[in-house]
Length: 384
Image 1: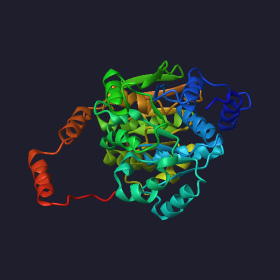
Image 2: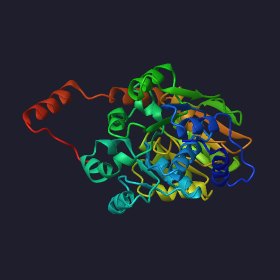
Image 3: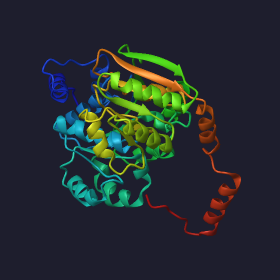
Image 4: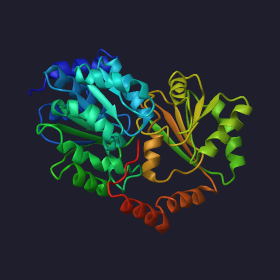
């Protein structure tokens, strides 16, 4: 297929809402690589660079040439919601099958069979779901033109957001057409992660990378051992900051406690965790600047796109430098100046040690699971 430069630029301008928009360095080269089927591609670019434009425009150009739908693998529900909204702004017909919308699954499956969906957004865990494979994937597998792996660092067990089901992607891709295009994107991939990506996605994986620096961000680290000091600092500082932002905590308990304390002092904040039942509503409130900040765990992380997010504050130190880069990179995407503040607490190391100690099951737990599996001649499956 031949790349249509004029149409690609038109789609970019529709997506950005700017009639004078131009591609950033590397964007057009990535789109052209995918559209013309030059092989599997990994794009490593800074947060806010516009990786989603690459796959939305490529998917649209493929679709308009008569090719089949795109499957987009995305790790977080908040990211999926952002992607669906971005697709809608570009006129791309995107839909999702995830744990939040079971009432829509049949309608989405029917639309896929009718070929009226351009992009299907799913989590990596969906690849292990037998019902999805037989009821949905089987009917469209022969027509899929592009497989997009967003936040591809999750493939690697050296990555800060390792997701084991991402490892199913290579086996999944083998069941798709031989001329399948594959695009992987991330903002964080060191040499170890890159080696893992090549092991899963193929040794001939081409890499397009750019400058990961973010000149618009001003970063500051303040050591405040006690939580009381940090709470007082937040109560004093948040009202002085321009715009709205995110306050990250390491645990659900701290997110709720910090938000509750700040609200009691008249600040317009809300807690956002993986346990929040109204996550979609909270995201919209932040996007519309209806709250000063969301006090959030990493459930509000990769891919959350609010171009005018003015600040990111860490109530505690994140798990790694890479995780910090991902989280602070939410800020200042379309601003000349944004602020990132890291508040280091006395409990940071203890929390990190707890997460490390609980990252793997005990010998007894492993032995128990293996014993149950061995006792079942026909095997066992776990519903998603």
